Image 1 (cartoon, rainbow, N blue to C red):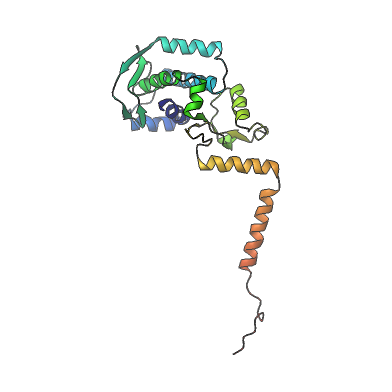
Image 2 (cartoon, rainbow, N blue to C red; image 1 turned 30 degrees about the horizontal axis):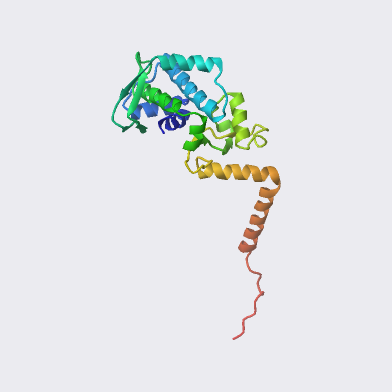
Length: 233
């Protein structure tokens, strides 16, 4: 789904250098102006709020609803052939503002993603198998994408609330599209969540495992004792 791809790719757009790299890939040699970057961040936040409201079964806040209505009121729809553009699969129904606030292809990507996402309510979101990754990452290396309240609700839904309480870890911000109800965006996230839960249940588990590994290595690497064997012709 386009909107899932857009929200996952947008995690890199908060980094100016990564955004510039992607813009160069789609033929844009200039950076976004500060006003355009503000619009981009606002649009991504609105998309994420629509997802969060459906995923967490909560109402949109007044501010979220007003921002969404302004955007929707300014959209124009047009049919087009399905195609792959700038690394995204565009559906046959496109949307963009009457007066574009972003350069292409960003304007069409974000507008079309919004229309596609609005067509899914909470039930259809579940049917499509879209959810937030249940994996964990080091908090210092994770981009914050949701409000504090939504972060807590997502963590509770993923069964991660206790693991994240100390603040050293955070939930992976990526969305997962898995009709088979997969909960992780990668094997790395699955392994990290397993390790964090194991450590929480058995604080000495990994230290003991390392000790056993070192003892085995020492036993294998220890040179044989002279005279330990007797050879008979």
